[in-house]
Image (cartoon, rainbow, N blue to C red; front, side, top):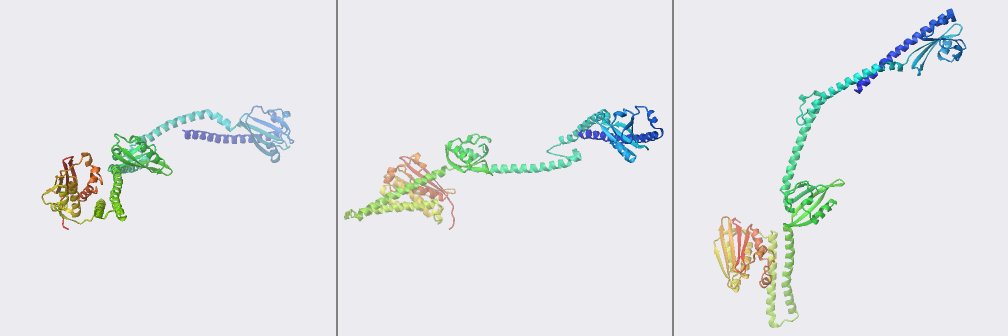
Length: 548
């Protein structure tokens, strides 16, 4: 519309300018001709010719003498007019014979054309004619120009509406998922081709993104550790099922606050420390155990864009640490007792405080305590080797019935002193393993069955063979073990009855050696006991014969 309007206005002004230029040239020529004719007539007839000219003929005639004084003027009183010698056309005529000039009057919006001709006596005849100026011409055509302009604007508006609709309609009808260039005009073909290639690229990227998400979800869901990813406002972006399980959270959906998983003060402080920009750790105690929480800030240039939180079950680790501390304390105590006894007796002997006849008895005490100390250190060394899996692997085919007979023979004197009857039954069965470790397992089980038995009690050892498993059963008729203690009897230095255990010789490591010795052979040990009636230990070992 603007282009059409400007074009129409420019065309009208151009045409008007051309017409005006031609009109001005024609008017100047007419004035020049009139001036020459009138000058010639005045030369012949004198002032009488001028008196015959009627006013209102459209031209103005002025006669100026050689000094510039107006002699005659067809429209004004000559005496009222000033000297004209300074007029451009007059001075030029006096000098060259003829002169021309033009002047524009803004008042009447007309242009005056003047032409002067010098006569033989030196006077000058000037003829002036007025015609409309360019603005006057434009004013004359303003009304038709406005009508034409309105018509053009209306036509261009209708045309623009129709053209724009025809252009936009195919664009609006484009199927962005499946752009086809055949259904639109050819100018849209590059755009549609670009859309099609972009769709293919976006589709491929979406597939890759979906695949990455599935892989991430698969990996995080297969983790036993909990993983939580949160934004700076602690809104959960990703969370695996292990995190929910470890924190004991029930129903939870992404987009909730991380505090919906756990709202304890310890957990809050840990997360806030991480938001401060430093890695933070804490231990959470839940109803199902202890959890270690590690919160790390996710940094992006100079700002924190989120948190990554790992959660691990450290219940067993903490229990092992507690057991380690207890073990260290117990070892120190168990070592200190015999060493103190030995030191005390040796000090008395060195200072001559013991009668000569009591020296053998004190010597027996030293030997007994030293033997206890040696046994304790031996058990600790054996247990450490089993713990570290550094025990000598002198594996061979071991026949358990014969090994049990050897162990009972070694314990025959202890059984007789306690008044415990022993019996071995079952069948011969062989396993592939360490004869030394299996011997220690059987020895500790039978030794405990004798030591914690009652006077006149029984010890029964039985070996059996089931498909792919060897069974060793050690049962006694002793004092038994209360049910609440059965889960801890394999712990090092654990005592069911500490007062009674101190009266019974032993290191407190026997059942720990049994447990680790059985585990060394990929077997299991089970305990069944009833206080006052006795205890049954059942060891199951895999049967696997090999050649050395």
